[in-house]
Length: 633
Image 1 (cartoon, rainbow, N blue to C red):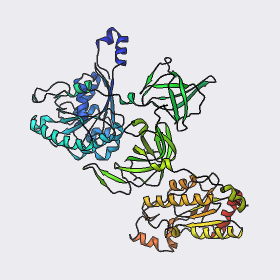
Image 2: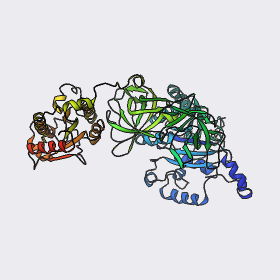
Image 3: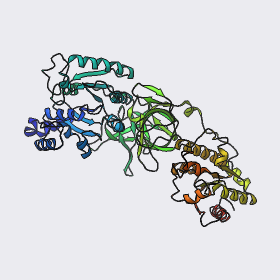
């Protein structure tokens, strides 16, 4: 929404040109529940005459129906667009609004105050230049105030406005304002916030929102709108080394090949030396192409197509960098993680990581610690739950170019995606590459898998048995190994119980431990396949994601999943170890099929229905499959 201007009627071209070159400020409002964030933005728009007459009519009707201010206008309704928000009088989702004044353009994100919606606040803050943190003058600095302030600092927002709201409810007391200013300043110093502007105001009454309040003559600072219009936002990215993630290789014809993307750091000119990562090839910029013609210079924030002087290999996800100040390349990092999903983070599980225009596989390590945002203590943790923040190591399935987050938010920030559901489950900030990422390399050997295959006269592979406890996995796996042994096939059987006596004796049966259990076995299986063996793996392995991880560790055609399918009541009736009885009695927690889920394979290479097949016939079917795909002759 733009302000009214006389130029619109008299000289629309002049108005559009002046509007185009106004600076843009992105800011968020955040704080605790019911501090008045939505009301403040609504009042800001209203007092700036940025609300259309039909919107005002709707606002008046809505205020009478679901408003919280009696017969007065409820400005929060301008922002709270969801029906649930209006019914409950709270903000749930992030509400974005664009508006402009004579001096500047703005994009504001109104973020939720409830702890359960912290992830929404992180989303809104990820692109902000400034944060407006509201504090209810009656309540002072609360837990959620500290939480949001810590996240603001963590996400690299350097400029903060502390809006001490509802001053009308404390009789515009200077003493109340000073006490809150002192308390917040002490906390802000501990989290590294030092560019803070305190403004006492009343969003409901309009004091110090746009116009100077006559009821707080003791305050001599700017109004909120005055500060937003004049605050200097340094364009740090323009001064940073050049960075442009390749979004698209632009090839409209045989004579043109350019790399399109948005510049996320620095400045580029024709003739500049650039380096394409992670490959490391170099060239010089030939042209900077846009729809409106070639440019002599492009800066951070612009979307352009760059052509290079040399024909080099680059594709989507690569990063074009300044030749004399390239990004780092690594595949293992330390990072802050903000967990954003109801299901806890599972260390050892393989997720997807999207950073810039590149998507790679990522495995998260156990948290080094979890941060208590109330007092900033570092707490021991084995995982992260919804809205928790921790520091973890992470390993990628390939090297990526990056900058530390505090150097460049665009090339150091990422999101974590669940491989199966494609839900965004977390967000992260890269700190630095681990030393082992640069120091550890894959050692090539002379005797490889192919050489071992020729000696063995059979290929190697993994036969992965999955099913409920008591389904008969171990029995069938033993028969298969015996038959393969008679055929002269070199094998090894990894059984779930046997492995827990040694390699995995430190693991329990929580979801996180089960993930780590299978991750280790997947890696051992990969080594055994490289050794030329047919490795038989008999584990419940209840989660599809970990079975997919195990499959990804070997080459295509080397993984045979066997679903030993037994109904729960049948498996429970067998109960050879008495485990189901203990689980039913509450003596055994996290037991698959009872209080922990089992995710059956969607499509397995071999399906064994133990209600209609004997163990012997199931083993024969598996042997036949191994023969049909060429693992054994």
